[in-house]
Length: 223
Image (cartoon, rainbow, N blue to C red; front, side, top):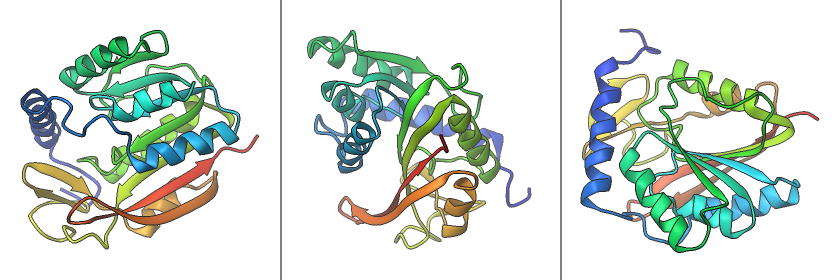
């Protein structure tokens, strides 16, 4: 196995682990949006965005925040359990008309038309158990579905994180802790994904109790 390939069984193991986790802990991340989502809503609004795709939406705390801020939201995740929780929450909040869900594995092409969205958000989705090749392909899909001038804002754990280099090693920068596999980004990968984009920010921040160390990356397409 080369540095850019991945054990195909890992993807299915991770899918099942997330399914079990959402089933055992409904609303596991709480109702409040993540700090990156709050920031992203401000960035998207300043850019004049109207419609947002969230990749890896989970049970929906960030997708629901975007909807409350007036955006039309498509929330994608590979867990039907998480998406069921999201739809229920959207209906209970009176946001059902603003939020649609899409069961989708980001290893596959996005089932969306070219140049159909203003903004894409992904909080720690790109640093899941995805190979470098799969991450690059996903970035290409994001580029395809964004309109000219569209914004892509994502967060990823990076190689300065305490978990990097520890736990079960799966190759290609992926290490597993507590059943969750993470692809830790170095700055070279951030820069590679920004090739052909306007890289507006690669902001280092911390989150959680470890704390997790991440980058918040904002990049936009030329108009």
